[in-house]
Image (cartoon, rainbow, N blue to C red; front, side, top):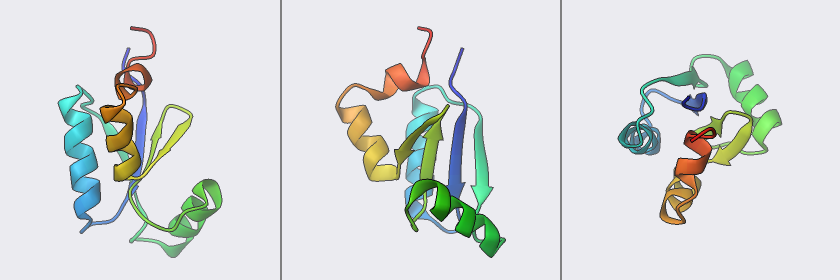
Length: 88
């Protein structure tokens, strides 16, 4: 079973697009996107939860991965597959 992926994002965020592309290349078809540009309270909630202001902020199941650079670093380290496929 694939992991549940949540991504805080905005409409015009190139890093969000790159993160989505990387996740899709790993077989993740569904990404729950939470748009922080539509409601300031959602951005505030994201900042409280993650301690960060920037998007994307990515969660894989209950693990806060961080932004695109963090996601990419996990992939390069060979650790992303394990997070995305916890029962594999």
